[in-house]
Amino acid sequence: MEVFHGIEQISNNSKHIITVGTFDGVHLGHQKILNRIKEIAKIENGKSLIITFDPHPQFVVKRPEKEPIKLLTTIEERLLLFEKFGIEKVLIIPFTKEFAQISAEAFVREILHQKVGFSHILVGHDHFFGKNREGNFELLSKLSNELGFFVERIPAFITEEITVSSTKIRNALLQNQIELANKLLGYHYFITGTVVTGDGRGASLGFPTANIKFDDEHKLVPSNGVYLVYSNIDGKIVYGMANLGFRPTFHSEKKRVLEVYYLNFAGDLYKRNLKVHFLKFLRNEQKFNSIDELLIQLNKDKEHSLNLINNLNLKNFF
Image (cartoon, rainbow, N blue to C red; front, side, top):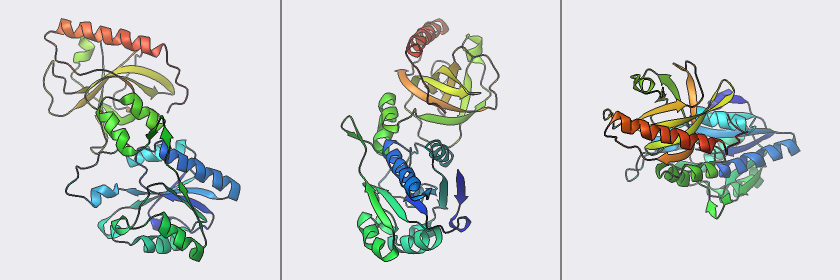
C-alpha cells in the first residue's frame, strides 16, 4: 500500500477510485465502502484510493458544547486496517484551520479533480464535507456531469437491527459492551502500546504482567475492569487477562494503567510494541482487603479465561 503525506506528494490519476473521510474505527460501515471501491477498481482497471485527514477534524474545528472526541483508531492504526482490507493507496491530508475554510465545491474542483484525479467517488449515507460541512451527495451529483465523474452513495450497514456508527461503538466500549463493539467493528478492538517497566508486584504473586503504555492520548480506552484479551506475539495468538484501571488494592494510580498477564507465555516483552485486542469483559476492577483475597480472585479469573479460550477459534487476526 502506498501512503502519501500531503496533496503535493500524489500525482493526478484519472483512474483513481476514491472515498473521502476520517474513517475512525474502520468499522463494518466503512468496510462496505472499501469493498465497493476495490470492486470498481478491479472492474475499471483503476486504483483504490482513500483520502483521509490527520489530525481528526474535530480537534481543529472544536465545538464548545461537545466533549473532546476519543478516537477508535489512531492514524497509524487506520493505515494498518486500510492495508489489511486491501486498499492500494492512501492520501493523508493535514487538517488545519486554513484547510477547514475551503468550501466543499472548491475541495472537489481544486483538490480532488485538479490535483488528485478520479473517475469514481463513493460516499457514506451520512457523509458531509467542506467548510461548515456544506458538501454532500447532492453537491457531488451536481458536479459529476460537469467534471466527468461517477458518484455513488453507499447505504448504512445494519447488523441485527443496529445501524453501525463510530459513536455507537464508542458508547459500547465505555459501557463494558466489548462484544457488541467488536461485532460493529468487524474485528476485535485493540490498543497499541509499548511494554514498560512495572513494579514487579504481579511477578511476586505468580502473575507476571506486561505493563502497556498507551501510544496516543486521544485513543479511546475501554471502561475500567478485567478483560479477556489477546496479542499477536511473533506471529502467534497469545491470550491473556488484562486489568485496566487504577490498581486500587495496592495504591490508587493517578493515571489509568493497562496490565496484561499472558497465559501460557514465558518471554521478555520489555520495550516491545504490542496490540492488545479486547475479547470479553470479565468483571469490574475491585479493591481487595488482602493479598490472599486478591489471589483467590485472580485464580478464578484465570480458570474462567481458560474455559472461554477453549471455545475460541481465532483465525483472522493481526
